Image 1 (cartoon, rainbow, N blue to C red):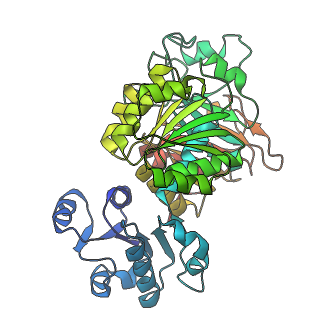
Image 2: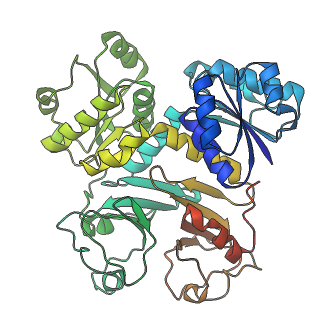
Image 3: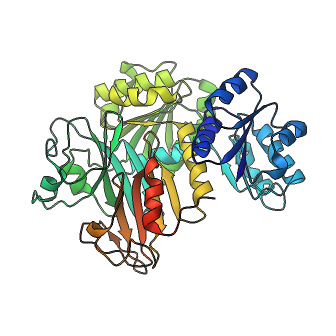
Length: 456
């Protein structure tokens, strides 16, 4: 297969890296000549210098034979022109375009089949907003994934020094007799992801991934030492595009929202657009402001301004004052693990979230969904158990399953009932199976599934 990527910023580069690792032919168009030379050394791909809106450049990048176009430059207009040219000169089956401008929301018809015929519009700010909402839905979580139409969620929680899980292995936890039943699917320890077995212990500072369903999981959250209080009162720092989108989404959930923005004109604009949000104008973010606005009594503090250093510092300040759940938007990928280590509960990177969304769309032809986690090398796969698969009609403990993957949940076919899998759980044909796996484990998972995950 041949994929043409227009724009080699963080999003384009990460997609190209993932696709080339899977032996897919990748062509990249990039206008920055210095970046072209660097990419040529870093990637096993054809990198062409030029504009993504140039017919000559796109022809040189094999557009007439490409099977997929991914236009992810920082310019909406260049991305749209690249898509138009692709539709004019070749019959490309799949077109994915990055669009950030909100003005296009009222003109969505141009993206439809009879016009530009774009298969997926990706907006990093919108995807980041959705990720933050998922995290808020699980109080105290550092990461969150929702699959199977929200019937199964995976929450990532940091283990504090007072947690009852510390120094216990998974077998001891399951036999503790607390009346609380849950499945730990993965452990993130000092940047290294572990798919745990029964003898593996939980250590202070670990981030553990827990399977949750749609029901009230308060008992599980309390046992983990997490803030089990549902999120109702939220403070947002930053009237950015993401801040506006986030406030709009939280208003739909009937939350009480305070939004702090330093620009007075932007505050007036937000006040006119948002109906349930209290918009506060403050030239600076400081301790006095947060204490005056009772940040310690808010259920969550979310920093989403366009200044990532200010986001990090304000989140840390809110945490120190006493807010139980602080979330920071961070654009620099190198900062992600550092920010988590110094006390910010959850870190969201719009570019990584956008990459995860694009890859999920690319790969979902043979499976229900694949979701890439934002800051770790893992994916959550939702697949149907076929009658010919090695998954079915035998206890899970008897399946020859790769070490770096785990069955995280089962939805019983025809019933919609969520099953937290155990060793004696038997999967039936037609069940939906949720798999948590390291990215490198997917070829081994394919062998078990029999429905080969030929993504393309």
